[in-house]
Image (cartoon, rainbow, N blue to C red):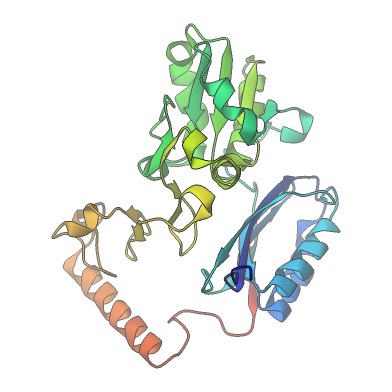
Length: 317
């Protein structure tokens, strides 16, 4: 008998497309997610859709069918995983200027991006001595894991990436004929390749499907990935096979906390971690402690997490 799958289906998706009227797309999508009990976050912008959602198989399939009916999204690809419990507390459908914020309004991935590299071919590319490998994620994500030899730009947000590249272009690309970039699900590195092409670098590549596709399909014994991959939900991080990792989340600053950091006296569950302890006041930490206490009481009563939204999805601008 095959093993029973965890009941919650999680999908991460994005698609660069042309949405002439995002505001018209938002309400029906939010209503459908609410009706199907699907939770998570979806971002809509003129350049397309991006997000991660979770729910029952039937609920996710209904929402995915609707998304595929949107302009340019018929063949949208998704990364899937399973969970025993719902990893989100509510559903948000937001209107944004960009589905991934780079702050470069003239960059259009639909006009041209780098070469897509399937996970099966990624190792061969990054092992070539004339390939420079760049991690396009944020510094706190890179701290949990990355590919061997990858350059860490140490950027706090993706918006910082263009300035970092322009300032370090000569150093980074010296002696290299190819630039290979990657991110969690593929959206940031796809936009980053479009940016590099606009800067006059043509031989650029990006990992198709991102780290998640790589960890899902490449056997651990063949993997060049080291550590875990941060994900923006309650799983916090995943490893090979997209199995949940060992990292936790600081409820005060929303940053990942490693097992080693959780041994620090500055880590108090629900209240603080080594990264944010010095940045918060005693009054703030007292507020976090009370919130954490109320959350535990709600869980003990079998009630929804404090702050959860019951029976509706939020349409946010």
